[in-house]
Image 1: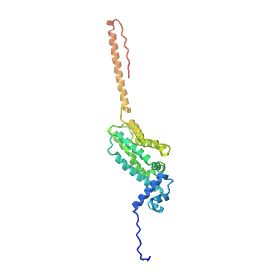
Image 2: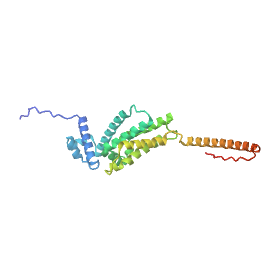
Image 3: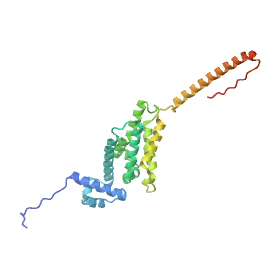
Length: 256
């Protein structure tokens, strides 16, 4: 070959394609090994790139983990938004939120463990984009509760943020055995149970504190009225006792 021979051009994949391939490979390795046991060399091999290429796009494994989780959250938000659109009624909306989250955990236990065990305990978690995406994801509960309070379906004293924390805390606790490979859970039954429990606790029914006080006062007033009626009846019986030649005894039962 002479010096002037024409070299065959090297085709390079666009950076976006290489990043996508690396993230897909990393997600697969994380699912099999977890974030802490995953090796960059194995991720590079699966992505079909040299190990050094990964460090061209990600400064370290932690950044790669965060980017994979960010992409996962973006997919969840898009999928959940499509499911949530058109759902009417507060109970239905709460149930859809709970059901979707349970399905997500069952479908992606490895990524769920990464969020719960690796990312969330980190000191800088609240400064990450994962935290922001998680806030957007969980705040759908806040929106549902606030709308329910505004429409009168939920009690005025309900804290929307507390309801959000109760729902997602309950889900995490209920699925923890599954994430530890120590048990399982029924998605539909669990979603129904959580939605029913939360809805009944915050619904603006006659069982709210203000309504219970009003009902108690109404019962007291009705009992007082019956006592007055019985007293008047007893007085009338006594006044007519001479005509019958005897005294009539009146017995009454008063129910509150």
